[in-house]
Image 1 (cartoon, one colour):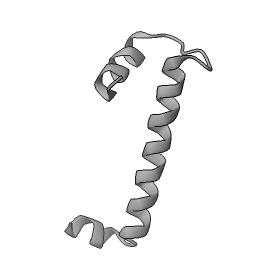
Image 2 (tube, helix red, strand yellow):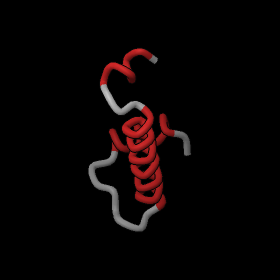
Image 3 (cartoon, helix red, strand yellow):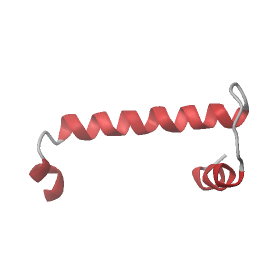
Image 4 (tube, helix red, strand yellow):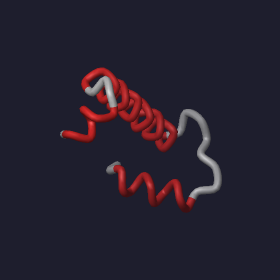
Length: 53
């Protein structure tokens, strides 16, 4: 499932049950977002360095 499909499904589904395939996708995307946030934090220690890129 690609991110666009996931977003469309999340917008149409009122509740996602734990341990479902959709829940697994949500968890994977959440972990990826955390990983990216950590990389940004440690590669660009201040706001100005991040904006310059």
